Image (cartoon, rainbow, N blue to C red; front, side, top):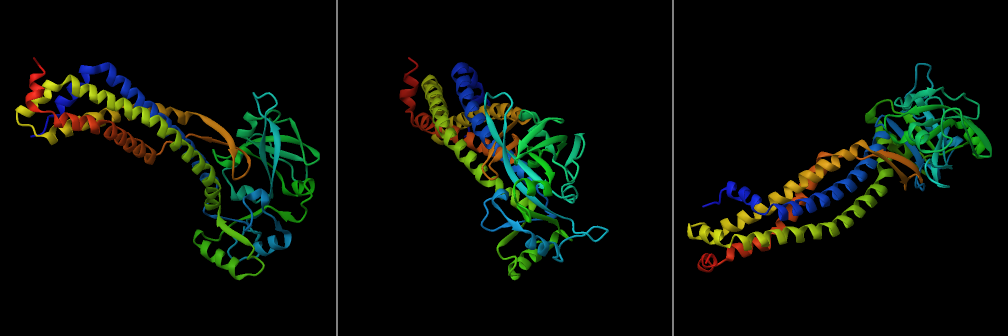
Length: 392
């Protein structure tokens, strides 16, 4: 015979305080576990959304990111001549050679605190390649001038980064003439200006950091890679879809935060498991007579074992539900940190995914099982006669 679930649920009321404390401890552990993984997921989601599978980005193979990549003008022209490069109605390639540099700006609300900001020099097709970039305040920078537009994230987090102000870098003063939004992607954490002006300011005439172009069709990825492998002029360079490139840029940071989160959670979970174990041992001690009566009525040891394990797991799942509910509110927040891939500031939001919810619930079940197993075994092994005698 199986012990009814109603009996298990009824026992929650018999020890409200210890049960509530255990649920609170598990909720805290799950909250920390999910919050850290939401950070990792948020970084990955933001950077993956930055790229498009319709675009190819080219970097030098030895480069660790855009800022350390160099593509000379001769190579740039070879890339633009490839048959897989899409062209507009006038026959011009839909491609941009970008110059990517990092500058320092003071952060708002920090005394003397500075952080790195990405400045991207682009050509006019960049806005066709990245249609999510829209100027929402001020105006577009004038080509051939020392003007820049600033991403919405930079505008709200750095001093002097609003429309109408000036910033100094590259040995000159640049005027911020507009603010743009890029749909919550990594471009929101950048400044954009004329690539020719950036090349001149940083003495990189005839050289680009990356080349990005629209393919004639999304199924041309393998053809592009084969072309690069077969052409001696392009073998030092690597071609990837924009989405793949930015996803790889997020991996190190994402893995680092995830590993740190798991490490922290392990310490918290030990306390939660001990709490669950204490609660269940107390339940066994308080219900010795009940257990003896159940055994006398014909319930098997395995039924008693299953009942106490179920009770412990239910407590953990309730705690997990509370922890997930609290963590879900973090999605309303945005945070910024130094992206290890670009060595510049990146703003992103916490991201709660179905996979994280499932992982949290499985983690809670594991804590409940671990904390409840030994007390459940003790309950199942109680001698019927001794258990009933304890009532006297």
